[in-house]
Length: 92
Image (tube, rainbow, N blue to C red; front, side):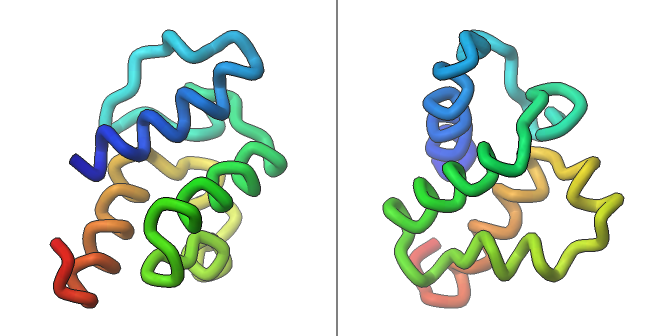
């Protein structure tokens, strides 16, 4: 369920670039596979905040990563982070 929600958010971001039909798996990388830029991450963060509220702090998550980890960030890693946040609040 979280995977589907996040890929839906990513498709909305990618729709502006005409890339909304890209196949997405847990191993899909934000930078290499989806060609997301920093402004796209800001948009995604806004969508995550709108959906999950303060339970999921995307900016805090990114701030805790090294640059190389951000470059190689995968959908699966973000899904795991969101699920972990929801579990902490008893919602998952």
